Amino acid sequence: MTVEISVIAPTLNERENVPRLIELLDAALAGRRWEVIFVDDNSTDGTQDQVMACAADDPRVRLIERVGRRGLSSACIEGFLSSSAEHVAVIDADLQHDERVLPQMLDAFAKDPSLDIVVGSRFVEGGGLGDWGKLRIAASNFAKSLSYLVVPQKVTDPMSGFFMVRRTSFRNVVPNLSGRGFKILLDILCTAGKDFKMKELPYEFKTRQWGESKLNSTVMVEYVALLADKSFGKILPLRFIMFIMMGLVGAGVNVAILAVLYGGGMLGFMTSHIIGALAAMAVNFFLNNTFTYSDKKLTGLRLMSGMMLFYVLCSFGLFFNVLVAERVVDAAGSWVLAGFLGAVVGAVWNYATNTTLNWRA
Ligand code: GDD
Ligand code: MN
Image 1 (cartoon, rainbow, N blue to C red):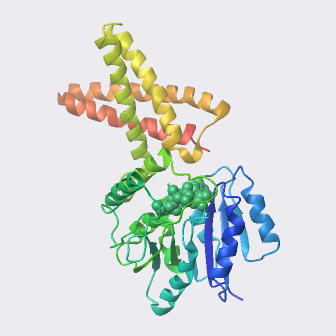
Image 2 (cartoon, rainbow, N blue to C red):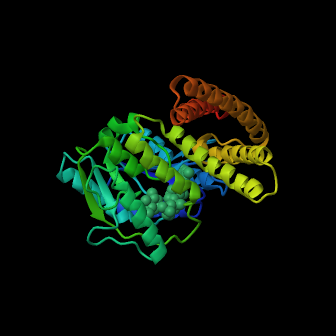
Protein backbone atom coordinates (compact mmCIF):
# COMPACT_ATOMS: atom_id res chain seq x y z
CA MET A 1 0.00 0.00 0.00
CA THR A 2 1.34 3.39 -0.91
CA VAL A 3 2.27 5.80 1.82
CA GLU A 4 0.05 8.89 1.94
CA ILE A 5 2.39 11.11 3.88
CA SER A 6 6.06 11.04 4.89
CA VAL A 7 6.91 13.14 7.93
CA ILE A 8 10.54 14.27 7.92
CA ALA A 9 12.04 14.83 11.38
CA PRO A 10 15.58 16.26 11.34
CA THR A 11 17.51 15.32 14.47
CA LEU A 12 20.64 16.44 16.22
CA ASN A 13 20.86 15.03 19.74
CA GLU A 14 17.16 14.41 20.33
CA ARG A 15 17.35 10.87 21.78
CA GLU A 16 14.57 11.10 24.33
CA ASN A 17 12.24 12.95 21.99
CA VAL A 18 12.25 10.22 19.33
CA PRO A 19 9.88 7.63 20.88
CA ARG A 20 7.60 10.39 22.12
CA LEU A 21 7.31 11.92 18.63
CA ILE A 22 6.45 8.52 17.14
CA GLU A 23 3.67 8.08 19.72
CA LEU A 24 2.28 11.53 19.00
CA LEU A 25 2.34 10.94 15.23
CA ASP A 26 0.66 7.57 15.71
CA ALA A 27 -2.17 9.26 17.59
CA ALA A 28 -2.48 12.27 15.29
CA LEU A 29 -2.33 10.30 12.02
CA ALA A 30 -4.51 7.36 13.08
CA GLY A 31 -6.28 5.97 10.02
CA ARG A 32 -3.79 7.49 7.56
CA ARG A 33 -0.98 5.67 5.80
CA TRP A 34 2.05 7.49 7.14
CA GLU A 35 5.76 7.05 7.81
CA VAL A 36 8.32 9.12 9.69
CA ILE A 37 11.85 9.61 8.33
CA PHE A 38 14.40 10.74 10.86
CA VAL A 39 17.39 12.46 9.26
CA ASP A 40 20.22 12.41 11.77
CA ASP A 41 23.51 14.25 11.44
CA ASN A 42 25.67 11.86 13.40
CA SER A 43 24.29 12.80 16.85
CA THR A 44 26.59 12.19 19.79
CA ASP A 45 23.83 11.21 22.24
CA GLY A 46 22.79 8.00 20.50
CA THR A 47 19.73 9.38 18.69
CA GLN A 48 20.49 7.08 15.72
CA ASP A 49 20.42 3.97 17.92
CA GLN A 50 17.17 5.11 19.46
CA VAL A 51 15.58 5.53 16.00
CA MET A 52 16.94 2.14 14.89
CA ALA A 53 15.48 0.51 18.01
CA CYS A 54 12.07 2.05 17.24
CA ALA A 55 12.35 1.09 13.56
CA ALA A 56 12.98 -2.53 14.54
CA ASP A 57 9.39 -2.94 15.71
CA ASP A 58 7.65 -0.37 13.55
CA PRO A 59 8.10 -0.42 9.75
CA ARG A 60 6.70 3.13 9.55
CA VAL A 61 9.88 4.43 11.16
CA ARG A 62 12.90 5.06 8.92
CA LEU A 63 16.35 6.54 9.46
CA ILE A 64 18.73 8.43 7.21
CA GLU A 65 22.13 8.82 8.84
CA ARG A 66 24.46 11.48 7.52
CA VAL A 67 28.11 11.42 8.47
CA GLY A 68 30.45 14.35 7.85
CA ARG A 69 27.60 16.62 6.80
CA ARG A 70 25.57 19.12 8.74
CA GLY A 71 22.62 21.40 8.38
CA LEU A 72 18.91 21.46 9.11
CA SER A 73 17.85 22.53 5.60
CA SER A 74 19.98 20.01 3.73
CA ALA A 75 18.80 17.27 6.11
CA CYS A 76 15.16 18.09 5.25
CA ILE A 77 15.94 18.06 1.53
CA GLU A 78 17.53 14.61 1.74
CA GLY A 79 14.56 13.35 3.73
CA PHE A 80 12.09 14.71 1.16
CA LEU A 81 14.02 13.18 -1.70
CA SER A 82 13.95 9.74 -0.09
CA SER A 83 10.16 9.74 0.06
CA SER A 84 7.71 8.35 -2.48
CA ALA A 85 4.60 9.65 -0.71
CA GLU A 86 2.31 12.16 -2.38
CA HIS A 87 2.73 14.57 0.54
CA VAL A 88 5.83 15.30 2.58
CA ALA A 89 5.87 17.25 5.81
CA VAL A 90 8.68 18.45 8.02
CA ILE A 91 8.37 18.73 11.78
CA ASP A 92 10.94 19.49 14.48
CA ALA A 93 11.84 16.33 16.39
CA ASP A 94 11.89 18.23 19.70
CA LEU A 95 8.08 18.29 19.95
CA GLN A 96 7.84 22.10 19.68
CA HIS A 97 5.56 21.90 16.65
CA ASP A 98 1.98 20.60 16.82
CA GLU A 99 1.58 17.23 15.08
CA ARG A 100 -2.22 17.50 15.42
CA VAL A 101 -2.18 20.01 12.54
CA LEU A 102 -0.83 17.35 10.12
CA PRO A 103 -4.26 15.80 9.32
CA GLN A 104 -5.65 19.31 8.77
CA MET A 105 -2.85 19.90 6.30
CA LEU A 106 -3.71 16.69 4.44
CA ASP A 107 -7.37 17.74 4.34
CA ALA A 108 -6.39 21.11 2.90
CA PHE A 109 -4.64 19.32 0.02
CA ALA A 110 -7.64 17.06 -0.49
CA LYS A 111 -9.93 20.10 -0.68
CA ASP A 112 -7.77 22.11 -3.03
CA PRO A 113 -5.83 20.03 -5.57
CA SER A 114 -4.02 23.12 -6.86
CA LEU A 115 -2.27 23.74 -3.51
CA ASP A 116 1.51 23.34 -3.49
CA ILE A 117 2.25 23.89 0.19
CA VAL A 118 0.49 24.22 3.56
CA VAL A 119 2.43 26.14 6.20
CA GLY A 120 2.00 25.86 9.96
CA SER A 121 1.90 29.46 11.18
CA ARG A 122 2.27 30.98 14.63
CA PHE A 123 0.92 34.30 13.40
CA VAL A 124 -2.54 33.54 12.07
CA GLU A 125 -5.66 33.51 14.27
CA GLY A 126 -5.33 30.59 16.69
CA GLY A 127 -1.54 30.32 16.52
CA GLY A 128 1.01 31.49 19.05
CA LEU A 129 4.61 31.66 20.19
CA GLY A 130 4.11 29.90 23.52
CA ASP A 131 6.42 31.07 26.27
CA TRP A 132 8.81 33.22 24.19
CA GLY A 133 10.32 36.19 26.01
CA LYS A 134 10.29 39.77 24.73
CA LEU A 135 13.86 39.57 23.43
CA ARG A 136 13.34 36.42 21.38
CA ILE A 137 10.10 37.84 19.93
CA ALA A 138 11.89 41.05 18.94
CA ALA A 139 14.79 39.16 17.34
CA SER A 140 12.41 36.88 15.49
CA ASN A 141 10.34 39.83 14.24
CA PHE A 142 13.48 41.52 12.99
CA ALA A 143 14.60 38.40 11.15
CA LYS A 144 11.10 38.05 9.73
CA SER A 145 11.02 41.61 8.43
CA LEU A 146 14.32 40.96 6.61
CA SER A 147 12.81 37.90 4.98
CA TYR A 148 10.08 40.01 3.37
CA LEU A 149 12.76 41.55 1.18
CA VAL A 150 13.07 38.25 -0.64
CA VAL A 151 9.95 36.12 -0.09
CA PRO A 152 7.45 36.55 -2.94
CA GLN A 153 4.41 35.06 -1.13
CA LYS A 154 2.14 36.71 1.42
CA VAL A 155 3.17 34.42 4.25
CA THR A 156 2.73 35.36 7.92
CA ASP A 157 5.35 32.88 9.18
CA PRO A 158 8.20 32.56 6.66
CA MET A 159 10.51 31.32 9.46
CA SER A 160 8.32 28.34 10.24
CA GLY A 161 9.97 24.96 10.09
CA PHE A 162 6.62 23.16 10.09
CA PHE A 163 4.86 22.59 6.77
CA MET A 164 3.60 20.05 4.26
CA VAL A 165 4.35 20.16 0.58
CA ARG A 166 3.17 18.21 -2.46
CA ARG A 167 6.11 16.01 -3.38
CA THR A 168 5.96 16.79 -7.10
CA SER A 169 5.82 20.54 -6.41
CA PHE A 170 8.83 20.23 -4.15
CA ARG A 171 10.72 18.12 -6.68
CA ASN A 172 10.46 20.96 -9.24
CA VAL A 173 12.27 23.45 -7.01
CA VAL A 174 15.02 21.14 -5.70
CA PRO A 175 17.65 21.98 -8.35
CA ASN A 176 17.59 25.66 -7.36
CA LEU A 177 17.44 25.37 -3.59
CA SER A 178 20.28 26.89 -1.62
CA GLY A 179 20.07 24.17 1.06
CA ARG A 180 22.08 26.20 3.55
CA GLY A 181 21.23 27.02 7.12
CA PHE A 182 18.06 26.53 9.14
CA LYS A 183 15.30 28.03 7.03
CA ILE A 184 14.17 25.48 4.49
CA LEU A 185 10.68 26.97 4.09
CA LEU A 186 12.11 30.35 3.16
CA ASP A 187 14.41 28.65 0.69
CA ILE A 188 11.50 26.78 -0.94
CA LEU A 189 9.19 29.81 -1.16
CA CYS A 190 11.86 32.08 -2.65
CA THR A 191 12.97 29.46 -5.12
CA ALA A 192 9.45 28.51 -6.19
CA GLY A 193 8.24 32.07 -6.81
CA LYS A 194 4.85 33.68 -6.33
CA ASP A 195 2.84 31.15 -8.35
CA PHE A 196 3.53 28.49 -5.74
CA LYS A 197 0.12 28.18 -4.12
CA MET A 198 0.21 28.40 -0.35
CA LYS A 199 -2.18 28.13 2.57
CA GLU A 200 -1.49 28.71 6.26
CA LEU A 201 -2.91 26.89 9.28
CA PRO A 202 -2.40 28.00 12.88
CA TYR A 203 -0.35 26.21 15.52
CA GLU A 204 1.03 27.10 18.92
CA PHE A 205 4.81 26.77 19.45
CA LYS A 206 5.49 24.51 22.44
CA THR A 207 8.23 24.52 25.08
CA ARG A 208 11.12 22.13 24.64
CA GLN A 209 11.05 19.47 27.37
CA TRP A 210 14.23 17.50 26.62
CA GLY A 211 17.55 18.47 25.00
CA GLU A 212 18.82 21.81 23.79
CA SER A 213 18.15 24.23 20.94
CA LYS A 214 20.77 24.30 18.17
CA LEU A 215 20.19 27.96 17.38
CA ASN A 216 23.57 29.72 17.60
CA SER A 217 25.56 32.49 15.93
CA THR A 218 26.43 30.29 12.94
CA VAL A 219 22.71 29.82 12.32
CA MET A 220 22.20 33.60 12.33
CA VAL A 221 25.05 34.29 9.90
CA GLU A 222 23.78 31.49 7.65
CA TYR A 223 20.36 33.15 7.71
CA VAL A 224 21.73 36.44 6.39
CA ALA A 225 23.73 34.47 3.83
CA LEU A 226 20.58 32.66 2.70
CA LEU A 227 18.75 35.97 2.20
CA ALA A 228 21.73 37.32 0.25
CA ASP A 229 21.80 34.19 -1.88
CA LYS A 230 18.09 34.50 -2.62
CA SER A 231 18.39 38.16 -3.60
CA PHE A 232 21.52 38.23 -5.75
CA GLY A 233 22.75 34.65 -5.62
CA LYS A 234 22.00 34.17 -9.31
CA ILE A 235 24.74 36.66 -10.13
CA LEU A 236 27.19 35.90 -7.31
CA PRO A 237 27.42 32.54 -5.57
CA LEU A 238 26.56 32.50 -1.87
CA ARG A 239 29.97 31.22 -0.84
CA PHE A 240 31.67 34.08 -2.62
CA ILE A 241 29.42 36.61 -0.86
CA MET A 242 30.29 35.07 2.50
CA PHE A 243 33.98 34.99 1.63
CA ILE A 244 33.82 38.73 0.88
CA MET A 245 31.82 39.42 4.07
CA MET A 246 34.52 37.64 6.13
CA GLY A 247 37.19 39.53 4.16
CA LEU A 248 35.60 42.83 5.21
CA VAL A 249 35.71 41.75 8.87
CA GLY A 250 39.39 40.92 8.33
CA ALA A 251 40.02 44.37 6.88
CA GLY A 252 38.43 45.84 10.01
CA VAL A 253 40.76 43.79 12.22
CA ASN A 254 43.76 44.95 10.17
CA VAL A 255 42.83 48.62 10.59
CA ALA A 256 42.05 48.20 14.30
CA ILE A 257 45.46 46.65 15.00
CA LEU A 258 47.16 49.36 12.95
CA ALA A 259 45.30 51.98 14.97
CA VAL A 260 46.43 50.48 18.27
CA LEU A 261 50.08 49.74 17.38
CA TYR A 262 50.89 52.67 15.07
CA GLY A 263 48.22 55.14 16.16
CA GLY A 264 49.12 54.42 19.80
CA GLY A 265 52.75 55.15 19.02
CA MET A 266 53.99 51.68 19.95
CA LEU A 267 55.53 50.60 16.61
CA GLY A 268 56.42 52.02 13.19
CA PHE A 269 53.90 52.03 10.34
CA MET A 270 55.20 49.08 8.30
CA THR A 271 55.71 46.79 11.31
CA SER A 272 52.24 47.67 12.64
CA HIS A 273 50.62 47.11 9.26
CA ILE A 274 52.32 43.75 8.68
CA ILE A 275 51.28 42.51 12.14
CA GLY A 276 47.77 43.78 11.41
CA ALA A 277 47.65 42.03 8.03
CA LEU A 278 48.91 38.69 9.43
CA ALA A 279 46.38 38.81 12.27
CA ALA A 280 43.62 39.73 9.81
CA MET A 281 44.45 36.71 7.67
CA ALA A 282 44.29 34.42 10.71
CA VAL A 283 40.91 35.88 11.69
CA ASN A 284 39.77 35.51 8.07
CA PHE A 285 40.83 31.91 7.98
CA PHE A 286 38.90 30.98 11.12
CA LEU A 287 35.80 32.95 10.08
CA ASN A 288 35.78 31.28 6.68
CA ASN A 289 36.30 27.89 8.26
CA THR A 290 33.35 28.47 10.61
CA PHE A 291 30.90 30.22 8.32
CA THR A 292 31.79 30.23 4.61
CA TYR A 293 32.81 26.58 4.54
CA SER A 294 30.78 25.39 7.54
CA ASP A 295 29.82 22.29 5.58
CA LYS A 296 33.48 21.38 4.93
CA LYS A 297 34.99 22.58 8.19
CA LEU A 298 38.68 21.71 8.62
CA THR A 299 39.69 20.21 11.96
CA GLY A 300 42.78 18.82 13.71
CA LEU A 301 45.87 18.55 11.57
CA ARG A 302 44.03 19.74 8.45
CA LEU A 303 43.19 22.93 10.34
CA MET A 304 46.89 23.70 10.77
CA SER A 305 47.94 22.80 7.22
CA GLY A 306 44.84 24.57 5.90
CA MET A 307 45.83 27.77 7.64
CA MET A 308 49.33 27.64 6.13
CA LEU A 309 47.93 26.98 2.68
CA PHE A 310 45.52 29.90 3.23
CA TYR A 311 48.45 32.21 3.97
CA VAL A 312 50.32 31.02 0.86
CA LEU A 313 47.32 31.31 -1.48
CA CYS A 314 46.33 34.73 -0.12
CA SER A 315 49.91 36.00 -0.51
CA PHE A 316 49.65 35.23 -4.23
CA GLY A 317 46.27 37.00 -4.17
CA LEU A 318 47.91 40.05 -2.68
CA PHE A 319 50.67 39.90 -5.30
CA PHE A 320 48.14 39.84 -8.19
CA ASN A 321 46.12 42.56 -6.47
CA VAL A 322 49.13 44.89 -6.38
CA LEU A 323 50.22 43.93 -9.90
CA VAL A 324 46.81 44.76 -11.40
CA ALA A 325 46.47 47.97 -9.39
CA GLU A 326 49.87 49.14 -10.56
CA ARG A 327 49.03 48.52 -14.24
CA VAL A 328 45.63 50.19 -13.97
CA VAL A 329 46.93 53.25 -12.19
CA ASP A 330 49.60 53.63 -14.90
CA ALA A 331 47.16 53.14 -17.77
CA ALA A 332 44.00 54.85 -16.50
CA GLY A 333 45.41 57.20 -13.89
CA SER A 334 42.54 56.59 -11.46
CA TRP A 335 43.66 55.30 -8.07
CA VAL A 336 40.08 54.46 -7.08
CA LEU A 337 39.60 52.25 -10.12
CA ALA A 338 43.08 50.76 -9.67
CA GLY A 339 42.46 49.92 -6.03
CA PHE A 340 39.05 48.46 -6.76
CA LEU A 341 40.12 46.27 -9.69
CA GLY A 342 43.19 45.10 -7.77
CA ALA A 343 41.01 44.10 -4.82
CA VAL A 344 38.51 42.30 -7.10
CA VAL A 345 41.24 40.27 -8.79
CA GLY A 346 42.82 39.42 -5.43
CA ALA A 347 39.47 38.41 -3.92
CA VAL A 348 38.48 36.22 -6.87
CA TRP A 349 41.89 34.55 -6.80
CA ASN A 350 41.72 33.90 -3.04
CA TYR A 351 38.19 32.60 -3.30
CA ALA A 352 38.73 30.34 -6.30
CA THR A 353 41.98 28.80 -5.08
CA ASN A 354 40.83 28.31 -1.49
CA THR A 355 37.56 26.74 -2.63
CA THR A 356 39.26 24.28 -4.97
CA LEU A 357 42.47 23.55 -3.03
CA ASN A 358 41.83 24.23 0.64
CA TRP A 359 38.19 23.53 1.56
CA ARG A 360 37.76 20.92 -1.13
CA ALA A 361 36.41 17.94 0.85
N1 GDD B 1 19.79 16.67 10.96
C1 GDD B 1 19.94 17.86 11.57
N2 GDD B 1 21.06 18.61 11.32
N3 GDD B 1 18.98 18.32 12.40
C2 GDD B 1 19.16 19.50 13.00
C3 GDD B 1 20.29 20.31 12.80
C4 GDD B 1 21.30 19.82 11.90
O1 GDD B 1 22.33 20.46 11.65
N4 GDD B 1 20.15 21.45 13.55
C5 GDD B 1 18.98 21.32 14.20
N5 GDD B 1 18.37 20.16 13.89
C6 GDD B 1 17.07 19.64 14.35
C7 GDD B 1 16.88 19.61 15.84
O2 GDD B 1 17.31 18.40 16.40
C8 GDD B 1 15.38 19.79 15.97
O3 GDD B 1 14.68 18.59 15.81
C9 GDD B 1 15.03 20.72 14.81
O4 GDD B 1 16.08 20.54 13.86
C10 GDD B 1 14.93 22.21 15.21
O5 GDD B 1 16.11 22.60 15.86
P1 GDD B 1 16.09 23.52 17.18
O6 GDD B 1 17.50 23.73 17.57
O7 GDD B 1 15.15 22.95 18.18
O8 GDD B 1 15.55 24.85 16.55
P2 GDD B 1 14.63 26.01 17.16
O9 GDD B 1 13.64 25.47 18.14
O10 GDD B 1 15.45 27.15 17.59
O11 GDD B 1 13.95 26.49 15.79
C11 GDD B 1 12.91 25.82 15.25
O12 GDD B 1 11.81 26.68 15.36
C12 GDD B 1 11.74 27.72 14.45
C13 GDD B 1 10.61 28.63 14.69
O13 GDD B 1 11.15 29.80 15.16
C14 GDD B 1 13.19 25.39 13.81
O14 GDD B 1 12.28 24.40 13.44
C15 GDD B 1 12.97 26.42 12.81
O15 GDD B 1 12.95 25.82 11.52
C16 GDD B 1 11.65 27.09 13.10
O16 GDD B 1 11.39 28.05 12.16
MN1 MN C 1 13.37 23.56 18.87
